[in-house]
Length: 161
Ligand SMILES: CC(C)(COP(=O)(O)OP(=O)(O)OC[C@H]1O[C@@H](n2cnc3c(N)ncnc32)[C@H](O)[C@@H]1OP(=O)(O)O)[C@@H](O)C(=O)NCCC(=O)NCCS
Image (cartoon, rainbow, N blue to C red; front, side, top):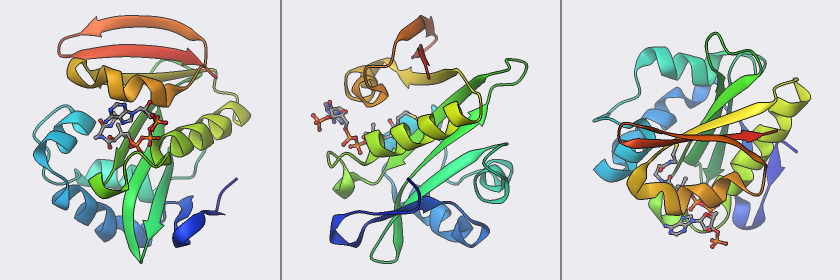
């Protein structure tokens, strides 16, 4: 359930327009490999079109959650529609290194997935770089795997919601 206050003052909530600068700051201070892993390219800053989707759209169009700790955004996750594929949403998650292995990605994914299912979505897609499949695949949980495929440097997964 969102907003959700976790231990140590960690807050999970929906992204809002006032988060734009903090989301850029999170991406900018992330290491190159994390950014590559998340965006599959050399991204130093979030493109304004994508940032706009994260902070300005209703959840029904593009759902984005942030994790806030000590006044900083330390993680975000989003689910956006896949064009021309009704019912399919694609996930992206970035967790700042010191906050990893604390269950934040799994929490973000579970919350986004539950919210998408309530909106009638039925397939969640994730594109994961081959080198990171072992660490990202578990985040998808034990949802039924509907399809997997290879896509250049990435591995595609579709799981049921
Ligand atoms: C992948 C990523 C989102 C995981 O975030 P996280 O908050 O550390 O993940 P969680 O703590 O929820 O981990 C859930 C499970 O995933 C697996 N996992 C996560 N990171 C792992 C790692 N580095 N090595 C091995 N397994 C890992 C584990 O099974 C873990 O469960 P456990 O801690 O109980 O063993 C984070 O490392 C990240 O932001 N990476 C860069 C961006 C990226 O790759 N995004 C995903 C593609 S969009």
